[in-house]
Amino acid sequence: MDTTATAAVTGRAEDVGDAEPGTGIAQAVAGTAIGAQPLRRNLRFQTLWIGMTASTVGVSVADVAYPLIILAMTGSPAWAGLFAAVQAVGMLAAGLPAGSLADRYDCRTIVIATEAARAAVTGGVVVALAADRLSLPLLLAAAALLGIGQAIKGAAGLLLTRSVVAPEQLTRALTQDEVRMNGAALAGPAIGGALYGVRALAHALPLMFTAGSFLVALAATALMVVVPGHTRDDRVRVRPADQPEGTAGSGGMLAGLRTLWDQPVLRAATMLIMFVNTIGAGFDLVIIVILRHQAVAPGMIGVALGVGAAGGLAGASLVGILHRLRPGVLLLGMCLLDVLILALLAVPFGPWWVAGLLFIIMLGVPAIRVLVDILVIRQAPPAQRGRVVAALMTLIGLGMPVGVAGCGLLLQYLPAQAAMLTLAAIEAAAVAYCSTKRRLWLARWPGDPAA
Image (tube, rainbow, N blue to C red; front, side, top):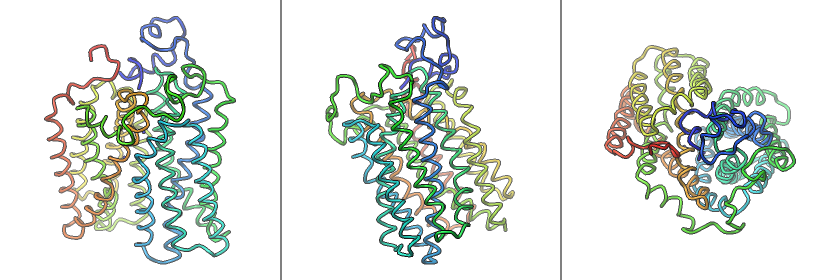
């Protein structure tokens, strides 16, 4: 379970981002770079975005390939689950150190090194698989390394994106990132399944695709310095100008956690997002069980879940509209809608009912993810941004193992519909608690003159 000038964070980035030099709108935004080129012509950002898209699709392909490979080797779903668990533990363990690393050193260099390492690890698995030397210890070691790499790349990549985008265009850039993530969620499983079906090289083609995607991301990040594009000083800078490389401000590795805790709005928002993400971790499992009890074919179950990803893709176009609401009102409102959707999913009306509800709830997810990026990045001290981002990612991720295990236990002892209603009740309690935080209701976007 990821900053801007006034216009970008109030849902009017579309008006300002493409404003011509000298227009009233562009000049009205304090602190923005007048005459900043449109985002579509920012070649540094677009080059980085292409690389990150390739990397994200590659990870999505691998998420399908690794379980299939392990099941073919062992026939045990438990081993496949252990691979995912080890990867998640690696991400969580590296989360806070990754933020400190991003604050101390050049994020472009970190992304290049991380993508090279992930390509090497995946390539090693491909060689072992093709040579019939792949073993479970090797796979679990790869899982740990890939999880660590994902955490390091996540923190550095978010700061790197911010460094190549004009402040008034960051909301639009983050919205384009939502297209990347949801598009990968749609395309990745299909590509992974199709490539795994090819028997060449012992079904290693999907992992070859993933290794290649990491190399594309590496090349795109390396090319950023030779293509023109807008940054605040026309250089790819991810640290404040007065902060030399190798320093990271004060507070140590836990500074991000303290920053989140010390700001009432961020504390309440983080708590609420943690609750929702914990429940959502086992959400797909409950839906699968509900649909299986309705004798829905496996292929149709996949279609129903895929429609949810399509909702996230469509929701990217709604970010500007939804961000006209105050951030706390938007967050609480979407969580209340989520509670309603959870309750309605318990009604056994078949796969298209489930697909429609998933599509609806996913429409608001891009706006929430961009909201979190805006609040965290903008309000964090510049020298601590990497650690704040990493702290948030770590806190959100902590609930995932609990959520998966909890949903499994609920399904073990309760009917699937009752389990879904229980999840709805838990989330409703969390929303009710956070809604008592007056500062969350009154929170405004960073840079809002009324704030």
